[in-house]
Image (tube, rainbow, N blue to C red; front, side, top):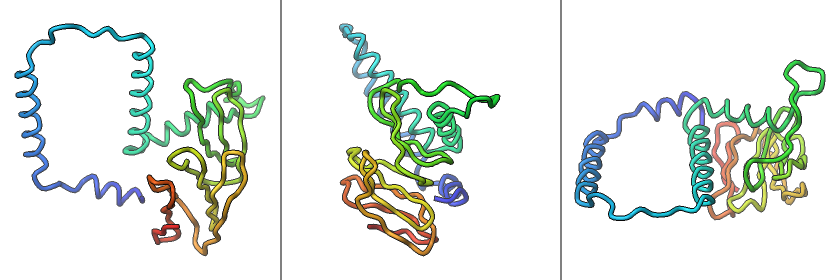
Length: 190
C-alpha cells in the first residue's frame, strides 16, 4: 500500500469510534470491579515466562513493522545483524552466529534473499527484491521486476510468472493456496 493511501486511511475518523471506546472501557471497569481481588496466586514456571516475553516481543516487532515507518528501521536492524558489512569497512560487524529464538528468518537485502536458520546458516534463494513466507513456512513467494515465483526453502523454484509491470508486495492468503500481489497499478491474485 502506498504511503499517502496508508496515511489517508489512518486519518479517516470512523463513525462512533469514540463512543465505542468509552463503552468498552466502561464494560472493562465493571467487569474488573465485579471480579474483585484475586484469591490465590498462580505459580508460573520460568520457561513459560520466557516464552511469554519472547511472544510479546515478537508481537511488538510485528506491530511496529505493520503500522509505522519505523518498521523499516527494524528491517534494517535485522539486515545489519544477518548480512554484515564486508571486512575493512568502518561499519563492519561479525557475522550472525545464531538466532535468539527457534525458527527461520526470511531476509531480503540489496544482494538478494536468504533464509537464515537458527544456527546462523544461510541459504541464498536468489536475486529477489522482496519475499514473503507461506502461512506454514513451506514455501516463499519472491519477486523481482516483472517476475513472481514460488520457491521451497531449499531454493527450488516451483513455478514462476512473468508480468509486464513490476511486481511488489506479494502475500499468501491464510489458507496458503492463493497469493495476492501488486503489478503496476493492479492488485492480482494467483
